[in-house]
Image 1 (cartoon, one colour):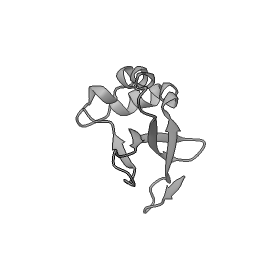
Image 2 (spheres, rainbow, N blue to C red; image 1 turned 60 degrees about the vertical axis):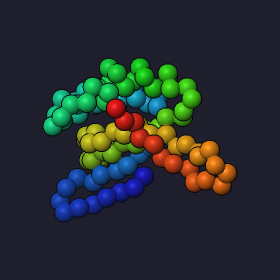
Image 3 (cartoon, rainbow, N blue to C red; image 1 turned 90 degrees about the vertical axis):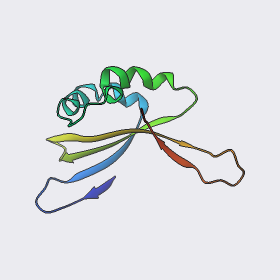
Image 4 (cartoon, rainbow, N blue to C red; image 1 turned 30 degrees about the vertical axis):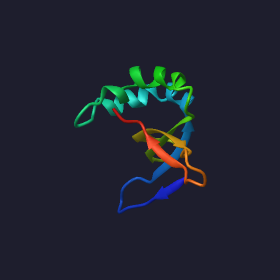
Length: 100
């Protein structure tokens, strides 16, 4: 976990989860999607969670940022991503985020 403290805001933590964890985050993601400035249907849990197992050619993970503590916290960011190896030898792995 990476901990970020700023002013008097609640503590923020970054966690990386396997794609299957998306099913456990549906309710929180619904809450987050309802409060976005510009909704993205591809990040809606009704699309995102069922799509995860179908991306067989990639190992998808979820980067999640929460603020709060273990008793009360809120999902603030969820980014699906994969780490891919380039086709060229000795190339550096690339982090690719979900895009639409």
